[in-house]
Image (tube, rainbow, N blue to C red):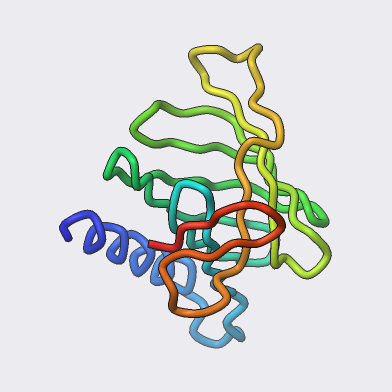
Length: 138
């Protein structure tokens, strides 16, 4: 329960920080909730910047990503209980699905290619199947 509260606080703080000082501008922040093989993944898009948090169900730990979006590809950084490193997330045309490649700073020459996938959360269910993969949403 504490991790879910911390996760919620992280998202709220980012949303507040992203909108601070933009009183007269139209809000450009878009939130998307994905489900992945390892659990929930929430992203905030603000023009070409992306930040988000994910929940590592097997480790009961939170992780975060941040980076820049160019077209349908985000290049950035990740950090969680396993360490930190570089990440490249490639979205499909409507941003309803992604695949990620990443590497850890402790092994910079070793990329994990096409090893993490996500799909937009279709409903309030905890799990679903799509394209032969099992996705977890909590």
